[in-house]
Image (cartoon, rainbow, N blue to C red; front, side):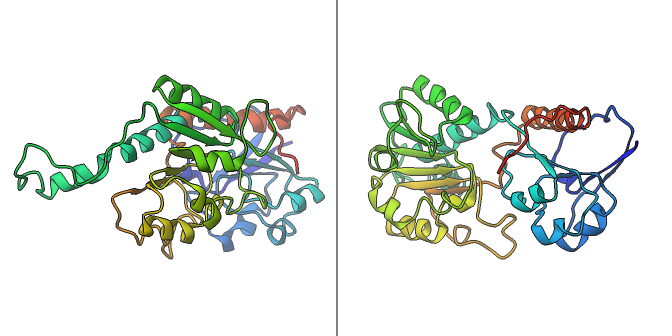
Length: 313
């Protein structure tokens, strides 16, 4: 039996995809708009998606679909209840970003604590040329060593970041939505951390887990790093805190809507203590190839009757 496979947003993965080992017909699309999804998946047995949403009204029109292979870890783009009711299996990618995300987090932390971006920008604008001294102190610089890192979400990524932080001389405290021995509560993270980094999935429970009340508890020079999901943070409240100077800074690799075609309150700010990168923390060359290889492995395992990385409700 020849299975039909459609990859709806191939342009979101810059890596080689090896041929599947079973009889198949494969079609890939650089990008798929919402009104193209049903037509492109109508005859598909297997759908590969990264960020193309598959909601209940779409899935109802795809009775042939058997497998959704997500080319990412997060599965909030899929109506999992509707998929399960239709007997559609969902699989995702796991444990591939163990270097690339932690390194991005550490890079953002250094950039903010050492004020790398504003000093580089001001030098480019000629501020150093006009200085009366050999240096100038327009932006505060704070050491990494001796500071406290609060990790929200203590899975493999959180633990990998903790090892790097401890090697830099940081004290590490962690919280997780799933209880683990040795962790602290969420309020302790907010009150005691000099740097907070988020690594939890986006769910109804975690949506806007960082909002006005959380910012009110944070240290006035604390920084917030988010490489997980934009919806974890109330972006309006963050913008207010940054403008008011009640927190030290923020570095985000994710936004609530991506791409931010209609703008975003954080992109409207021109502040030296705010960094926004375009959801690339996961995207080292090495990590993307690991992802692509695991994506094929997941699909082949399902076809062979031994599904792996299955996403449950």
